Image (tube, rainbow, N blue to C red; front, side, top):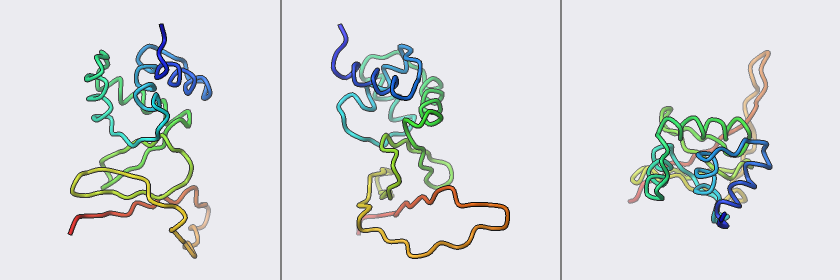
Amino acid sequence: MIDAFQKRGTEWLARAGVRPTRQRVALASLLVGDGKDRHVTAESLHAASQKAGEAVSLATVYNTLRAFCDSGLVQEITVDGSKSYFDTRTDDHPHFFWEDEARLTDAPADQLEIRRLPKAPEGAEIAKVDVVIRLRKR
């Protein structure tokens, strides 16, 4: 019997044409099963899968997140040049990075205003602008 979380995860994979292996369905269900957007690291998703009783290795989580990125299901946000977060909300929007908690959350896009970007160098074009606003508690 497939539960609502698995159903939502399976449908999410199908919309992107991603083959629904057992591990992918399990991870997709954790990511979107409740219908909410989330920001995860490979390590936090691995921990959630272990807590849910899913036998998925950390390497499989990394590979699956890469496949999800490649298919447009999630977007990767890199913080500090080394720490990657994966966001199930794939439209362009800014983020807050909470330094004290190493946590990424959505920032209100309607409050962000970018008036002008520098011109791209000769032979290049701007593909995307990522905005990560770093926060720390006072």
